[in-house]
Length: 387
Picture 1: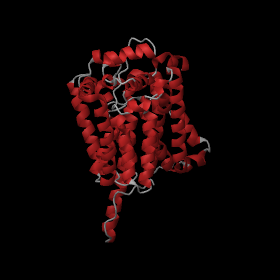
Picture 2: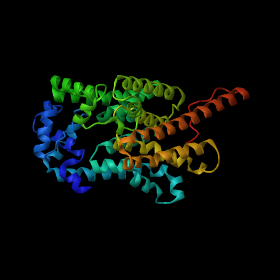
Picture 3: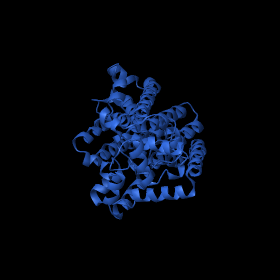
Picture 4: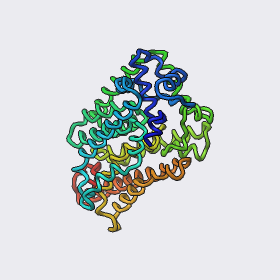
C-alpha cells in the first residue's frame, strides 16, 4: 500500500493539509471546500476528489508541525506515532489479557496486529488510534478510581465527537457526575479553541458542511465529499441500505439510536465495566463511522474475549458473549469482499451489545431476587459478573 499512500491518496491527506492551513495563518479557510481542494492538489498531489476536513478545528494544531515536512516524511512520521500508540495500548491492556495469553502467549499481541480496523487506520494515516489510546487510558483511570481524569481524557477525543458524545451521554444517564465533570471541562476547552481558531464565519461554514454530510447527504453530496453510508457499520448504514438516502432513513437512524442509548442506560452496568458497553454503543449509534473508526472497539472487544474465553464450550450464557465477540473480531474482513455492503458489520456490533447487556441485566435481576429471598439488603445491581 505504500506506493498508493505516498501518492497522496490516504486519508492523512486532509489532516496534513489542515495542519498546513493553520500553520500558514489561514485557519479561517479550514472548512472551505474549494480552498482545501486547491491546497491538497498543490502541496500533496493532484486529485479529482477533495477530502474535507470535518473534525473540530483544534485537531489541526496537532498536525501543524507535520505540515512543515514533505508529505511523504509527514506520513511516515505519523505512521511511527500511530504504531507507538498501538504498542502503548497493548502494554496498558496486556495485564488484562492474561486468559488469552494462557491460550497462546502470542495471542494478545496478534489481536492488535490482526484486527483489520487498526491496520486500516495505520495505512490511511487516520487519527482513530489516537482516540483508542485516549479511551484505553480513560478506562484504566476509571478502574483506578479516577473518574474525573477519565472524563478529561474522553473530552480530549472531541475530534471525533460523534463517538465520545454517546459515551458521555450514557455516563450522564448513569449519574456518574465526576466523569461528566471531567468530560465537560476538556470538551468545553477544545471546543472553545476550535471556535476561536476559525472564527464565526468559519464555524458557520463548518456547521453547514456537517448538515450536508448528514441529514442532507444525497448521491451528489456523497460524490462530492467521498462519503457513503453503505460503508458505515452502524445504525445509519443499515437505515440507508433499507430506506435509501431520504429523510426517512435519517429519522429511523435517530429513533433507533435514541432507543439503544436509552435501553443501554437503563439495563447496562453502571460501574467501571459500563465504559466498555458505552464504547460499543457509541460505535453503533455514531452518525459517521468507518472501518478505521472501528479501532476503538479493540478495547471492549479484546477485554470481552479475555473475560469469556474460558466459557467456550461450557454451554453457559458467557459462551454466547464470547462467540458474539469472536464474530465481531472477523467481521471487518467483509470490507475486502463486499465493501458496498459493509453496513452489515453493524449486526455483529449490535449482537455483542445485546449479549453483554442481556447478561448484565440477567445477573442484576438474579442478585435482586436472591436478596429478596434471603431477606438481605439490596445489593449494588450494577455489578458485572464478567470482571
